[in-house]
Amino acid sequence: MGCLVRFLGGALLLVALAIGARRLLERPMAIPAPIAGEKDTLVRGVRWRSREADGTGLPVVFVHGLLSTSASWKRALAPSSAGHPAVAVDLPGFGFSDRPWPHDYTVGGQAEGLLAYLDARRFDRVALVGNSLGGAVCLVAAAARPARVAALVLVGSASPVSSIPWNFQLLRVPVLGEVEMEFLIRPVTEAALRYRLFARGERVTREEVDDDWSSVRVPGTRRAALAAVRSSSRGYEGLLERIRIPTLVLWGKQDRILPPEEGLRLATEIPRARLVVLPDTGHIPQEETPEEFSHAVGQFLEEALRR
Image (cartoon, rainbow, N blue to C red):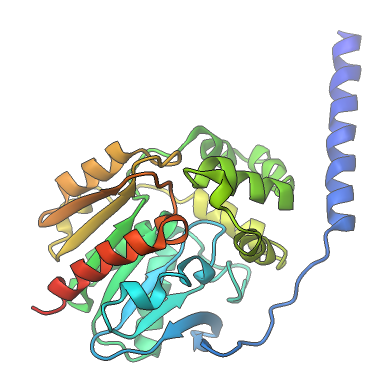
């Protein structure tokens, strides 16, 4: 028994030292001012950063996934929007948007914030495109305010009622989740992109790693991500059946986070939904195969927004 106690004590000491070293060596990043093509919008006292492409007609709003940013859309933003104004947002807690605390970073809270963002921008009606966590946010927003959303694109989308991978389940466990998040360092971010999020790791560029890692370095990101992962599914029963707008469910065939079967389930349960599966593509099609992604989404939006 004594040996076990000493072993556990030594292990806890090593974990504490590793966390301390990470915090000491990691240089926090201040949120930079917007550059050309970016915009800050104040929503209920919280600053939202967006990157945008010009167009005409009804706006298309893009929402990123967990621990990602609006930069994930930059190679596909204009090409996929079918000539419409394209607005990729950083959700609060991520990218270069604010990270207030306390704040509701759950899927429901972010969906409510997204609708408030549309009000602040005076977007009466939009198309929503969401990847992973962002897909769940778009689903909840579309169900809550169907008159505001003309079309919906779900890209490797989570939903409030979908199963999540075991490593995300661990993040939901108190204390254990906090410890796991402490070990989110740049090599871990790169490894996740190469071996979990992309179908082919050699496609991951240094720029894509930099985009994700820069956001993590902004204080408050890890805390916001934990709150998002710990969103409750209560109250979302029957959510998918309430989506009555044209919907494209777009999936990577080699998605290792949410398998294509999840895309089939969404497309089956959402009325009027169509499913497109991109071969040789993982969880972030807009980054890994942007041309194929843009073609599929642009074609869908051109048809859906013509009505």
